[in-house]
Image (tube, rainbow, N blue to C red; front, side):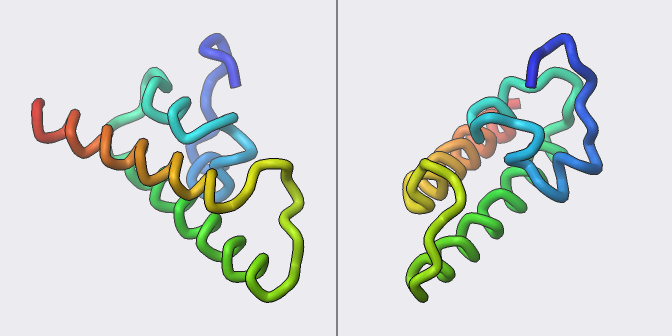
Length: 88
């Protein structure tokens, strides 16, 4: 995603990885409310947890990054978002 491109909010909430290259990119996305960012990150977390379960059952992940690494990135982004909310 580039900052010049309008964000498809519905798509981002359904499949965050198809719109953003990383959870940190969600935090810096212009034009999204804190609640939108939280919803996107929560979906990303849910999707990644499901991927972790599938990987644990012997199904390899489709992407190059390890699901645990992605989950850690999502959770770090959620913590930073919460810190921003509290300081506002």
